[in-house]
Length: 636
Image (cartoon, rainbow, N blue to C red):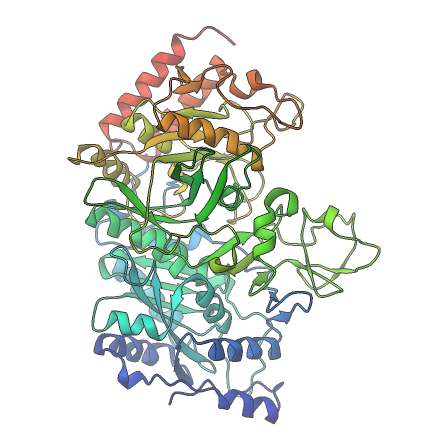
């Protein structure tokens, strides 16, 4: 049996030594499929771990890992909740690092578009595989010395689904093992399903080897040498230097979006940065929608919406990623490839997302939130739910914090990682191998001005243009500083696994597939503000009113009028009865000619800068048609 690492830092006593040595795996490396053995052996020689441990995914095993993380000071048990823990990362390891994320293909044009001369490309980073291999070999050489290499067999998607994909991740982080057990289907049953089949090879290291007798650090990482690298032609991912979830849980963005998007192009399906939501109207008719928003723009809140419209029911299938494929009858069906939620904590509260708050009360790993003295958690947004006279707060860096401090108690990108099964609003088909049928695709982002509350595309081609035209305020989910309106096409800008030009061609090609039913495409904007900086729309549960209009349009109701931007709701067609506060609907849907002209010019410049000579002709034509419609407007 393979044992967990017995090497000790100088801070660990003999008692801990006995506990560490007691954890063994019933799965021997020699019992694995030859291809997995080869993968392990090659990287054992490269990374030089002290031991190798094959994860079986059992509860007993998971508890042993959690106990070790607590003993080593990397997790704190939160006594207020059931089986919940807090992790505090190194302050330099708190978010996805887009500037250090690469797609490596033999031809550069297959990975990223070629930007205009003198312009920095923003649609991904590329290096030649040979060059990157050499760089990574130096980084990974001996990187696991003093640590254990954990072998994580994982499945993205329901086990047995025709859309699901299996990977094997090698890592030296127990935090990653515990988190992957939440976010994926992981362990022995995956190995049994895989047999001798193909798998996605994933290698991860925190990049902090330990010399004999060297004391470990609180949160091992190597920020100056971070690299998150994808080799799609080899079905391989390598991540070095970061322990943060978006960089280290390789089943998530790396497999489920970047590698999966390429597989989708090859195999005729879509891997998208979208939630999946089931909605049942008062007549009992149920429909499913997917919605693509950039990270930290409300996907989880919408996925767990509690409708304020009487008689409506909402059920969650997934809050972040969807894999979609047309079935034999031509219906687009979606699965959630993940098994958990990796949600942004700040802003989540009983008011904004009571379902999420109920979900995270057990079996949750919190990262970089603040801790209350009674064993609970705190973050910005929980002010009204926290009695500051009865509890003291320790911030995400482990320092005392008081309400009114100039610094945040929780990091803006702090997270909760929780099993999907905990969610009281999970759809009964969320784990169905066949997926759920999709009636509508929504795009959206944070737009304080210009873009109305909701509009419908004129047709599929125009809908692809709408997705390509997405812009949104930057958020804390990546390393960008400050609020700026960024182009984020399809909410996939950080996650494209292949060239955006080819990606657009793939979406456009779906219209040519015979015998299929294409969903309608819409754009929403919950974040438009008034002249004095106040949100025009109440959002949250009242977004069900927008969804009601969208699904009625899917049923063909005559409740829309054409506009330069798309189909807008007819005046009075949106159900706003019962809103707590009056809404200026005219302002929420106002189209300003000057603002739209600026929008079109920004899009034209973006396409010319980022995809010169590579933009598909249908998108060029849609942009010109948009400009003509704007020209015909009267001034606002």
